[in-house]
Length: 393
Image (tube, rainbow, N blue to C red; front, side):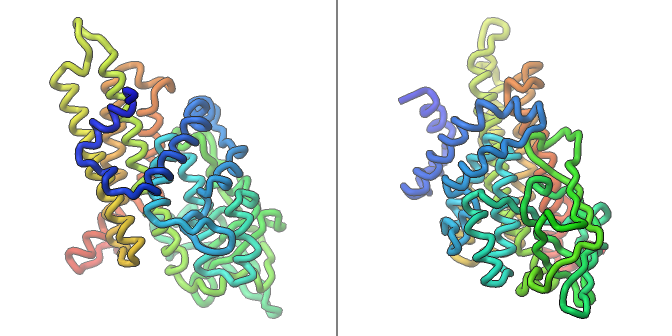
């Protein structure tokens, strides 16, 4: 038994592995192996250079990581728990790489899978599942983040049934490298979704830089200047905010797992360092304050992972409610970022370098904590649920 295996077993004090089936553990090992081989050796350089490694997109497709929880149309058709496990392992590598899988699968592909026509599904989903086609999801705007009902992007239907889109989107992952964009716009009949090929005249994606977070990822501004689309571009099943919100819940679910991957990776780095770093003639791990920090980290990782597993089982059973997703997103992001900060403290000055992952994870989690619903938004969702009184306005 390797020291790494021993550490993992000692850290799984609740035997959470015992809650996972053999196939789920095998999937975890496969994705973890991919992260160890393709992400860990390169992530410091990618992060420092603000480089998204587009070359691994098709590798992810070959592993069945893109749209993996979707069924049919060339999609892998795995369970929600399978998808969660993959998200956790990918984010242990880096949030930016897990975010790619989320934008591609939980947002862009889910929108087409849930609300698209059969022709749209057959046209895009098989290629997206293979990583041959990259998609993006345009909902957030410069002045409409947490309140998409106030979006200013408009879609105007023309007499011949075609559409003209005008407006702007912000913080749109992958937009500069995507071939197809799911764009949400206000029509005279409410919010509707449109499939926009990114080479359409009037569509412009500009990378947002420099960033202090999610540096190994791509986020963009989109401008839509009289973008003309055929009648077939509209997602026929998506009417109102239910369309984009259903996709956001898919992405939020993945975050519940992913955040714990970043937390676990930071904890393991701090634990290993504390055993080797000598101070006053004994290792840091021998000091009570260090042990308290490590124990506090471990407790929250175990609780957060248990929450993720339970949420995944509910989703697979078809009983998961949106408010339960808010519980997981709020709790696990909040706890993960504190774990990463505490891990950085154990590393001391060495922790501010890219030789160690905790501060990189903490910086990334500032974004993860913000997108797909801020702490404040999920707090108000839960507040509404428990009091029966909405407090958004």
